[in-house]
Image (cartoon, rainbow, N blue to C red; front, side):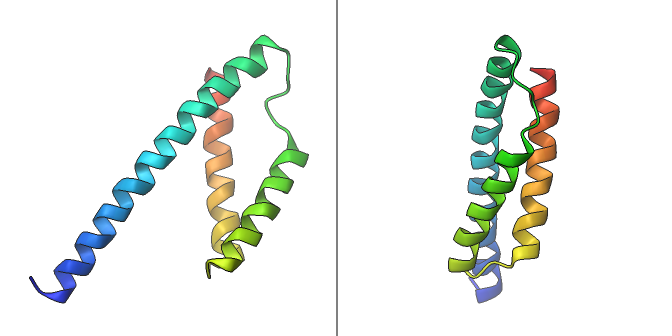
Length: 88
């Protein structure tokens, strides 16, 4: 196997793990949405989101990931989570 194919296979494996992790996260989001609805808790908590992003940016910096990438990624995840919570 050549190096290019090997590297592509590594990316494919990592993408599969990433998708599985996101799916697990969304299952927890479903539970969170049900809890919030049952307990009259607002779906959106901007303070919690800002704190989450700040923590993730600290972690990302240690891993060599850019602030803009991580911020955009978590904004997308957050929007998807809010949609799921609303539908829970």
